[in-house]
Structures are given as structure tokens and as C-alpha cells.
Image (cartoon, rainbow, N blue to C red; front, side, top):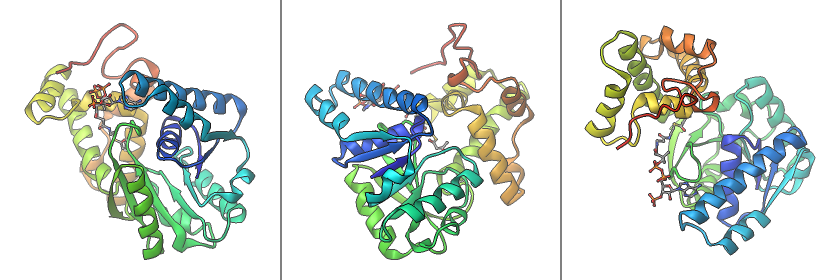
Length: 286
Ligand code: CAA
């Protein structure tokens, strides 16, 4: 297994692959980011031990299956590579072209993109039939779903092999056609944007919006808390891609969301979003 990128998603993907028994190579662009990513994996495995999901010896075995690198050339023996780099089409296309040159002809190449059409990455390779989307959900070790995206060119054999792989991770697999938002974000993003519009219009307090959906519909988190968790910048980025593709006002990002991103109120990752974590605020919980 190869994983490109050891950020929030890449480190989670590397962790679940290694937990399922795969020897996993994970690549970051420099030693500092690699060390930070591997630290994230260790921390999450530590949490799994604390929660009784893994024994300390299993944790050590899992850690032993993960190796970090800063060079894609080390991926030459990988059977499957999952790309989880920055959501930038040019970077992704370059990475796929490079992987296509390095990996064996039978290797499958997948992207964890949440929004970029898979055909763009497939078209950068000479193996468009062996390219698909594998969209993991955050937090990867906990969320039981992977959303697969079948490009126009993805073959049945690739999809079958990928499906067996996903199930070997203990995840449920769903399949979407290759259009912006796939299944989950096509439904989730308008819901999140609508919650921001509701707050912006002074229709209800942030707590009441969150508690309403948490207790009224049994979502684990209210929409504004989820926005802080996913990242306001990530949500805005996906909303803009959806709006570009469909020109549908459902996907138009609310002004408040755009302004909060400009103010660097990105959610948990910057300590402030709809809730001010730096100031000790906590979103409502059950
Ligand atoms: N490894 C393994 N298991 C872990 C773990 C880890 N590192 N950390 C936590 N867990 C387990 C816990 O032991 C617990 O298991 P049980 O239910 O068996 O007890 C479970 O995970 C839940 O953990 P917690 O009790 O710590 O936390 P919680 O109950 O408050 O749930 C949450 C946290 C899972 C994040 C929950 O709030 C949730 O599901 N929120 C919504 C998340 C969501 O919607 N994610 C999708 C975002 S959209 C996306 O990703 C797509 C995109 O493109 C934007």
C-alpha cells in the first residue's frame, strides 16, 4: 500500500490500512511534515489503546507496518496507492502522472479527493481504467464509510478489486458517479450552508441550531459544530466547486462563511470557528 500525504486524511488512511494488515508506505513532502503526520498516527493508535480498541502489542505491530518516505520513487512495489494530498487539481494531476511512471502497470491508483473529478487524475495517466476515487470520511479510523467514485474510464475489475480492499479495512463501500460532491457532499454541503444562512439571518442561536439537529434528528454533532470539525475553509472550497459545476443557489456559500474563512476562523484547527475554542467555549453536546 502507498499513501501520498500524511495530513489529517492521509495519516488516518495509513493507520486503517496498517491496522488491516497491509504494509504501508506513506509519503510527505519533507521530513518535518512526515514526522508530524507519523506522530498523528501514533497519537490516534494511542487513543485506540486507551479506548480498548487495540492492545499495546497490536499497536506496536501496526506501527511496525508503516514506513514513512519523502520520495514517490519508493512506491514502485505498491499494488495500490491512495493519494491524499492537497485539494489542488494541478498537484494531483502531477502526482498521478508521476505515480503512473513509477508504479507497476497493474497497480491501482486512487484519490481521496472530496470534490475534484476523478477523470482529471485518470487522464494524467496511461492507465485510466485503473484509477478511481476513494473518499474516506473524517475521522478515518472511526467513520465506517468509504465513498468510491467511478470515473468514465474505471474498469469493472478495478472497482471489484477496490471494493474487496475497502471491505478488508472493515469499511462499508458506496459507489458514486464522477460528478462534483459525489453522494455525501452533494447532500451535506447544502445542509451545512443552510445552517450558516440561518445563523446569519438571526433566525436562531448557534446552540439552538446545533441542538436542534443533534437531538431532533440524532446527528452526532449539530451542523455548526460539524463545520468547525471539518474546517470552514474545506467546506467553502467544496461549496465553490459544487456551485461552479451546477450553478445552483443551494451550493452558494453564505457571506458569513466566506468572511469567517477570510478572518482565519477555520474551526477547530485554528482554535476558532462558530465556537471560540481558544476562549474555552465548547459546542453543545448530548
Ligand atoms: N481509533 C479507534 N477508535 C476510536 C478512536 C481512534 N483513534 N477515537 C475514538 N474512537 C472510537 C471510540 O472508542 C468510540 O467507540 P464506541 O462508540 O465503540 O465507544 C467512537 O470512536 C466514538 O468516539 P468518542 O466517544 O471519542 O467520540 P464521540 O462519541 O464524541 O464521537 C465523532 C466523535 C466520531 C467525531 C462523532 O462526533 C461524529 O461521528 N461526528 C460526525 C463526524 C462526521 O460527520 N464526519 C464526516 C465529516 S464529512 C467528511 O469527512 C467528508 C468531506 O469531504 C468533508
